[in-house]
Length: 82
Image 1 (cartoon, rainbow, N blue to C red):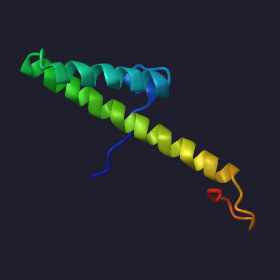
Image 2: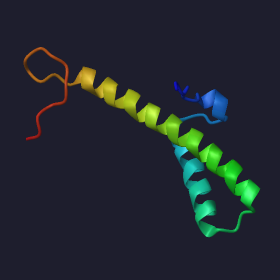
Image 3: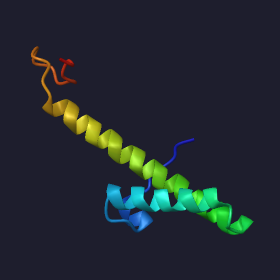
């Protein structure tokens, strides 16, 4: 099953940071246990979409960094830790 990753526009967020802040807020509210069951399920679904969005953005950032860093052999990759 191929799952499409939600975009910032789909989620109504402007950036990775906005999505992460909203995700954090949802997690805190779910942890408090003060939501009604149906509200908690809707919040959990939203959190899952935000999580997918944030993970995709982090993968994109990692790929960009990998193309910038040169290992010295002409191949893009992560620099060796020194």
